[in-house]
Length: 113
Length: 112
Image (cartoon, rainbow over all chains, first blue to last red; front, side, top):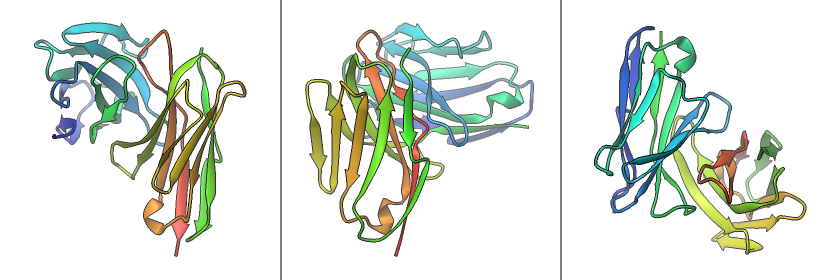
């Protein structure tokens, strides 16, 4: 049983560029979550999916952010026109069912210069 | 709106001590509460999950308790070791949503 995987692990980009992150959940987990964590803070919820359906989005998820889970397996998180304030660790988690225990991946650290 | 706080923000103890980390939440209508460990620059490792119907959960040297009426959870670490050094986060989940609301964590250092 492999855990949640995320790619890339690190991404450095220049302000204004677009970036895309990928998350592969634990197999058979139908719920997938995205969180963002800045230095010294706890993770903040961004959005979550049940299979292909995006069930909830945070107000933190501005129009520049979009997340997809097209086949109900892996998910992508895209940030368009990155800003320095987007620099953070982006964490993905999955769970077997709603309201179940969430298992986190290693995260993607984004640095916007 | 659920808010979660953790005290203390940082803790430094000698090896072998028993210690307690505190987590408070404002909305007592929680579904469950999860404790995580995070090493520097890494993702989160789930330690314990307590359902709202439970009072405590144990795993090895770790024991987590939940008191909904007072809005508190504690994580007890017995016989601390240098390998326990990490940031410990608690997160609450309410009935009407599947998202976790996190505290800011307690950064623990256990020195030999």
